[in-house]
Length: 480
View 1 (cartoon, rainbow, N blue to C red):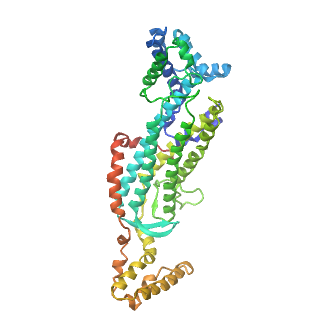
View 2: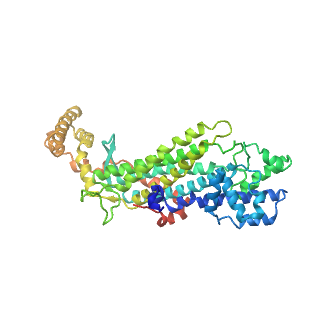
View 3: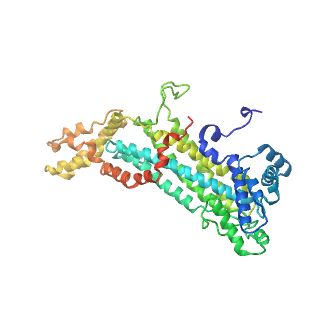
């Protein structure tokens, strides 16, 4: 059977980066199991158990040299993946066979490995968020003072600037980055807790020496690269499954932010104002050669929705962990954990590609704005007329009547907005400088200055924290 004769996840073949796939790969998983067994044996030897240096060396020599076929043969017979890999390691490290996994339960390797995978995945997600924030920050500065039509309820509202809108997108991602960083900082190692979390098996190994059992937990934690104080103090057979729900919730929040940004760009593409990158030979539609479909942003939205939907899985799993643990979490988590990270990872790579290559059509942006600006300028025209001695109520009624008539002209007749021409003919507005009143820059408020402050106070901090990762921006992958 070839790869084309069996199902392969598109997260593997099309969307997720090789870096994220490596974190959740069988090689990373099972080589981490072996590193955990090594750390356990080393710590047990240091604390006085009869484990030889030869046994330690035998395990260390086989950390990455995994015979997956042998492990598969053992699992088909034993129906237990951890025991299968213990036997596979024991075959190539026979001196160590008697002490591999000594006193441990399966969740010693499963839980601790998954926590390491989530920590490394969160760090990769954070780096990719920083790259997008950097790209949007650069775009925001470039277009900080280009006025454009803003919308509330997807109806024309007060103008903003192209750069200000991009800064808002970036700020959403900054909030997501802060959440991801917080999750990473508060993630803990399960450590060495035993079958139901009581450490009873290790108490038996160390003749009820509680101090040595506590030292064992600390030593293994440090050997696996975590500070000793970063352990879950109390667990059942597994680390608290609420942790999965917390982490995937942060991923879902990030996915929601990406979905919102990508949707905005899709709407702007419909208005012919801003488009995602479109390559010279790219095909927009198999039927309509003229089309430039926003396929990148559509892909972001599709994968982001998938990530958001997965957050229900860990919530239900955490809610149904009877007493110290049930096994109905296992199959579910094999899907929910990696696929949440892989799908978000793919979305981030596409968003970085989009943010780094946005195409802006300034003339169309201005034309769209100017088509609506007369309505928005009504209050300024009113104030300008009053300053020249006009009666405020009379001027208001004239503007109201002409605005309604102009709206009918646009909506019912398909004509242009002729409000300004109507008002210019009214004596009450004689002497009013229509050009000055209709300068779009007069309606964007502090948008350019807000962009400057956001870049200086927020984006520059992200750039400083992730300087190395942003510098590797060329390493961001995207399959289109």
